[in-house]
Image (tube, rainbow, N blue to C red; front, side, top):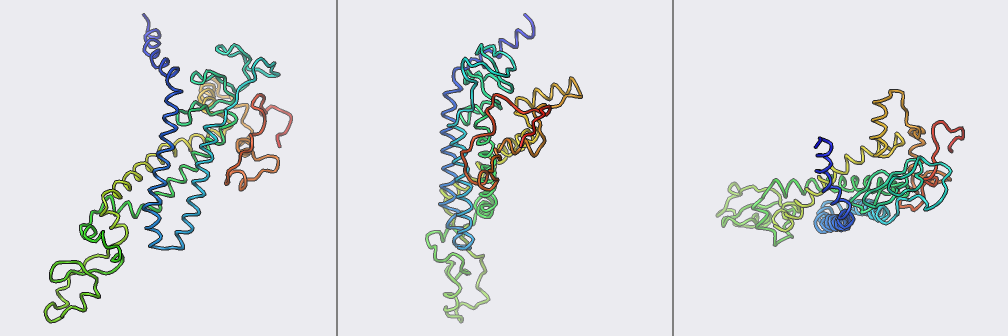
Amino acid sequence: MSRSYAVDCLLEPIFWFVDNFAGSLGKVFVFCVTVLTSSVVAIAYWIGLPYWWHRNPYLTVFLVIFGNWLLLNIVFHYYMAVTTPPGHPPNGAMLVEAAGICKKCISPKPPRTHHCSVCDKCILAMDHHCPWLNNCVGFFNARYFYLYMAYMVAGVTFIIVFGIDIGYVVIWINDPDAATLKDDPELIGHPLRMNQSGVLVPVKDILEYDSENFPREHILPTPLITEAQLISADPWKRKAVFFVAVACIAVFIALGGLVVMHTKNIGRGETSIEYHINTTMRKQNSNFRNPYNLGKKKNWRKFLGLTQGRTFIRHVLFPSRHAPTGTGLTWHATGDLEDWP
């Protein structure tokens, strides 16, 4: 019995679980992402749209257009990341360049290719296996994966910014006056005062009251009842707003951190796996340089596929199915004489 043997024994159940159930759990995760996204969008239309329409109809038109542009990109890139194969080395083909032989596939392994134990296949330019996609992130779907995360972070930020007023009133303020008026939406936005009977009524009705019996100095001021306060008075809407707030903040923190990490990796021309490998190599040799780092600008153009006349506006800001540059079997390196366009 040694320490390494003991660690291997402890990790063996984890490896067995991943190999046998990760594929099935991936479908559950995809379903959860779909339901969660659909729920947040539905609540935004149910609560947020009437709220902003009451405040400013012209701004609401812009918010609907901008929000649906974000939603279109989120849905498109997530669907493409889930359904697009990441790329695999051709079976039985003789490769011009091979980094070695895969010990599990027993076949030539191109540069930057790694074996996925969940998919049980070699993946071209493998970044990682993502259970939320039920798919590996590799050469052919890495752009879809990154843009999905970027647009999702932008989407939840959009909801947080334009829903913060609703969230503040609903979550932190519990106005009992609003609860008494939730069945009379015509009073929204009117100044209200309390009459002799202790009932809240519009000021115009108070002024018509006999001033001798109820002088104006006895009129008790109350705040304006807003759309957000009426939302707060509805228990189902309160729960929905709380759900959206928790979901959006959690997604912003989780995916925001991943976007920052992958942004740095793309700028350095390396995948997540290569980041860990290259970090170890730099510790062993201070002169080590990533051979696939072509410079930040070229790395980004290559990753986004902005070659052959493609533009950022048409092929990044809007959904595009264009394939990445190259085949994933061979790669330009910093030592190549050929200048990449």
